[in-house]
Amino acid sequence: MDEYIKVKGARVNNLKNVSYKIPLNKLTCIMGLSGSGKTSLAFHTLYNESKRRFLNSFPTYLKFFSDRPAAVDVDEIKPVLPVFGLPQINPVVGARSNVSDIMHLTELFQNHFYHYSEELCPLHKIEFKPYYLSNYLQTIVSADGAEVYHVLIKADDFLNSLAGQVLPTRSMKSSRARKILEFDKSHELWEVARFKQKHLSSIDEKLNDVISQNLQIYLYSIRLNKVIPVHYKKNQFYCEVAGCDEQKVPSRSALNFSPYNAIGACDECGGFGEVLSYDIAKLVDQEKSICEDGVLFLNYKRFLSQKDELIKVLKKKKISLTDPIKKLPKAFWKILYEGEDKYTGFDSYFRYLERKKYKMHVRIFIRNIQKGEACTSCAGTRLSYAANQFFIDTSGDISLAWAMGQSVQSLYTVLGDPSINLKRATNESKKSLKKILEILKAAIAIGLGHLHVLRKAKSLSAGEYQRLLLIKYLSYEGTGALFIFDEPSLGLGQKELKGILASFKKLIENKNSVILIEHNINLIKAAD
Image (tube, one colour):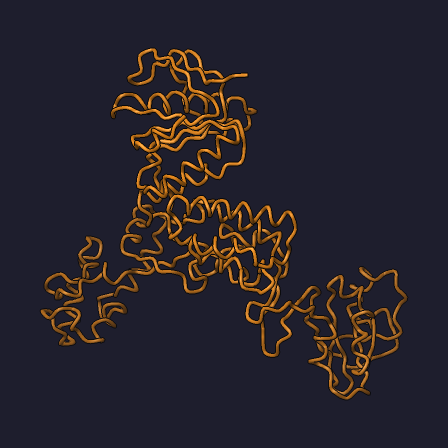
C-alpha cells in the first residue's frame, strides 16, 4: 500500500526537474517566499495532472463535457487520487447566486422538504381537507330536502368511459331542452344519478367512476328549470376555516422547492430574489438644475436631442430651469416621465430600450441605470408562494421560506434543537437533517454564522466568499481523496483557525490527504 504521493521530474513554471514525496492521510504544509514555486508544486503540477488523469478515466461521453487541464510537464505522479482544489482566485459568477447556493443548502433543503415535509394551510397551520363533489354541490342545491336533482354527463363520455355500465333510464335532448325524458340514445345528455339534498353525502360514492375520470358533470334542477355545468375536478383540497381561500398544491413535486425552475420560482421575480427598477438617482441629479445638466439620462448621446425639447416644454409651463431639481413641483416629474409636445418622456424611452434588449450593449446600458430591490412577493426567498405551505415540524413553524430567511447561526440553533418535533422523524429524515446541520456547523466554526442564507454572493467580501467555498470541502464525507488549499487562513481569527484545523483533522481521520500552501505560523505548526 502506498504511503506517499510520489512526484518525479516536475518542470512547470520555475520548477527545474523537481522530485518530491507527500505523505498520504496527513496534513502537509508547503511554505516559502512568494515566487518560490509553492503554487507550481501544488496546483500547477499535482492538482492539474491528477485532475487530468482522473478525468481521463471516465467514459468518452463524459469526458466530452469535462473541462480537462492540459498535460503537465512531469515524468511521473503515483498514485493519482481524486483531487479537490481551492485556489485564492474564485470569481463570483452571476448575480442570482446567494450564500445558500454556495453552501449547497439550496439543493439539500429542496431534497429534505420534498421528502419529509407535510402540507398545511399557511395561515391557519391545519391540514387541508378533501373537497368532495358533495361539498361543491352543497353550494348549489336548495335547503329543501325533497327536491330531486338529476346528474347528467355527455353521451360520448358515457360510451367512451362508462361503456361497461347499464344504460341509464333517463336522458335529455340537450342542455337547452330543460326537460328530463325517457332514455333515448340520440339525446346529448344521459343521466348517471339522481339525489335529494338530504341524501347529498352519498353522491360521491355513486359517482366515483365519473369523478375519477374527471368527466364533465351537469346538474338539472326542475325547480330552477335549467341545466347547471358542475366545474369540479378530483383531488381538490381546501382549508376548512370559514372564509379561507388557501388551497393545496395540485401535485407535489421536488420542483416545488427549487427557485431554478418555473414551478418553484416566484412569479414576481422569476426566482431571482430581486426586482429591477429604474433608479431615479442614476437618471436625475436632484442637487443640480436643468441648466446644469441635472437630468442625467438625457446626457446620453442617443437621447441628447430631447434635452432641448424638454427645456421648451418647461419654459412654456413656467417651470424654473435654474432651481435645483429637488425643489421643482410635481408637474415637472409628470412631464419628465410622461412627456409633452415633442418631448416623449422617460416612460417612452424605457419601452424603447426594452424592445432593444436583444442587443448585448442595450442590456448592459439598462442594467447600469437600474437598481435591485428585494422582491415583496417572496421576500427575497426566490420561491413561489406554495413553498409557504410545507412544514417539517409539528408546530407548523419551519417552512422552506422561513428557513431561507434566517442567518446561518439562527438556522443551526433552531434545527439543531433536540426538542424540535419533526413531522417525519424517520432514520432517513434524521440523516438528511444531520447533513444540513454539519454544513451549518462548519460555517459557524470558520466565522460565517452571521451571514444570512439569502445574502447575494456578489455582496460578500473576498474572505467571506473564500470561506464559503471552503465549506463544501470541509463537509466532504468520502475517503481516499486529495485536498489542496491555497492560504485558507486568510481573514480568519484564532477561534476560526481552530475550527478549520478541526475540519482538516476530520478529513484526515476519514483517510483523506490535505495539502496547504500557507504563511500562517499556527497552521504551519499544526501540520504533520
